[in-house]
Amino acid sequence: MGNRSGENLNVTCPCCQAKLVVDPVFGAVLSHEAPVKAGPNVDLSDAQKILAEQNRQREDKFADSWFQETNKEDILAKKFEEAMKKAKDSPAGKPIRDFDLD
Image (cartoon, rainbow, N blue to C red; front, side, top):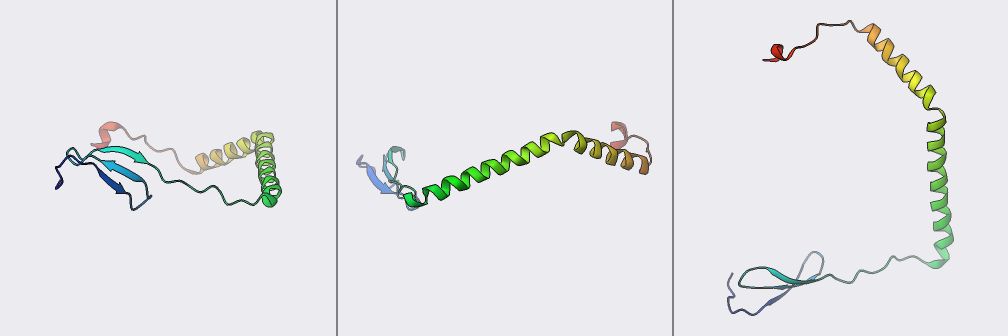
């Protein structure tokens, strides 16, 4: 590094605009100050709509999980039947041994 005078460098990050204090001798970051982030731009008059949408999404997820759980037995039975058909259609071949792979 070019500056060896021992005076710390104040640097602003070009990506996030954070303020850094860097030691020029060791090249280490001595302190870091994150930029102030603006809060979400939400109007309180829209809060009811947002809460209603979140409630609807929760209800939809619950209904989907309820349907999956109540029909789990039927779904597993159909998957088993499909696997049995597939197993019957394909002939049983000679198993591959580790020795054959060399």
